[in-house]
Image (cartoon, rainbow, N blue to C red; front, side):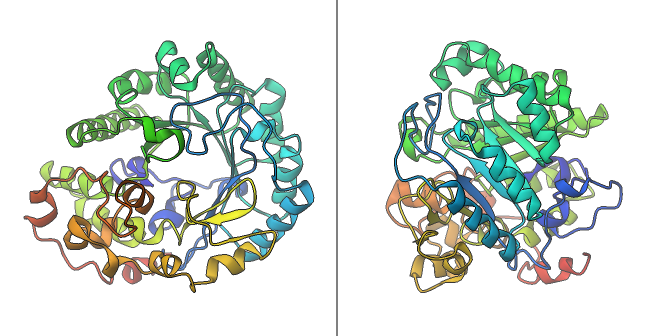
Length: 418
């Protein structure tokens, strides 16, 4: 994730220590919103994206699990899930994100969330929002979910409904947002950037402002599941979209709104942001470069700081990489699977810089971006170490001036601030 509000806007958020190795001094977030912090990005335990169920009440165009409104077999039982939560708590993962399918269709969701909280786990949910009611929103607050992420693909109802495969989905999702806001629950918007959604980002930011939404995550498309049929943004479209996100984020912060805006699944957003700050003579540009270096981009993401458990208990390097499994939690603990580097791909993900090929292998931002999203590269090319086709930086930007300072030791230097 690239936190635009923190990097460009100078905002402090509960995730700043975890993401950028810096203490927060201006805010005191509640305990349930604080994430465990490692001494370095390399030493992080993984955030666990857990697809509790494949079943979903919608049929979204970009669904990486290709989910439908039907019952799927082989899903973990409540008892099995609790055993996994015990292991995750003992392993001290920074957060568990319950996803799907649609996690709210699991009847034991709140039982599992309560159990996770009893083990002091940081709990998040990713939902389409259509099943949220005032009562459910109050349950989120009572259990102390750190954050509720709700997918919204457009501020234009017809566009969202078409993308989600259900007429009326927009209105039901907006009711879910409002129920969470009314209950006092931290809530955020999630959107996948495609040619269908990137053209109306201004209207979406107007909605974020108007509805008092706390956070928004803009995901770059990974062509997995049904997302394979969607058209990714061309480089110039991606640049325009990211510029809009940066500009509108600063506009919200200038109005005094403490809104967390992030981009996800394309770590070249970090160098792009840094280069923009250089052009603007922003005095914080070098500091931002150091923070990006500490974070490490893809270097400490999939296979290190991000993980996935699917509906049947299979462990993957991230939620888009379900084509490769490293083990199953029914046979071995997640913590054991995650630390086992006998598989060359898992070993490579944990130390990938020398394996990167093409533009990613020679890029001057390699220590900052580290090859972006490996799943997108492998799905597109068949090679897990090929250049990420989602990179929209120009050849001049990845090879040219200004010359960057050495970043090899940035992580250890900034970790001392914690």
